[in-house]
Length: 244
Image 1 (cartoon, one colour):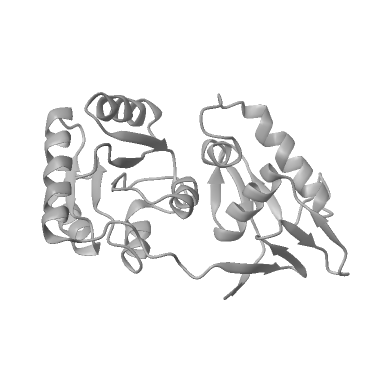
Image 2 (cartoon, rainbow, N blue to C red):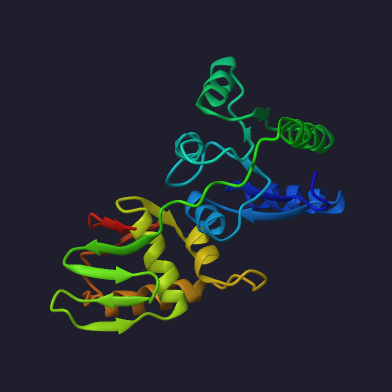
């Protein structure tokens, strides 16, 4: 087992996920917290984790759906942490591809024991936990627009191109990876802000406004980035991806 295995904790309960991260850190792990699927998916693209602690009932895409997608391309160990404690819930979670299932509320010591046991088992079996890299996306196409991730170029329907800022790029790519999904504010803040900085809610509104402007959107009646009252934002266009 690695000296300080990296564990990603995905839960929309901010108190719980920070408690889990703090506990794991004191026991020799490196741990990072995420409030939803888009944020952890963006993190996994940059750096594989040794193990994923995953809630089921999440805003937007739920944990079951993500685990099913993840299993198509990765053997990273997954432990579900869920308030859904019926036998059928646990069976469904394990059949979808989770390696373990722990019902909330749970003992931190039991969680730690299960993590260590699972990591040892994966190491003994020689199972690689790092996912194989997916084919890189060379272009996203939507509503006549094109976004090229390698160059951060945004090309309008007339062919005029301009560079996106780092925050604009991260925000737009998150929307393009999750079209027609309501993405909550907390998750979007995690995506656009650098790790280690304090979340500032107003930053998201400013970046949304800038991105809408880049896309020629009306502030009063946006067609692409729609506001979901009380929840967050939704990207309303269909997206096609070009890959290598």
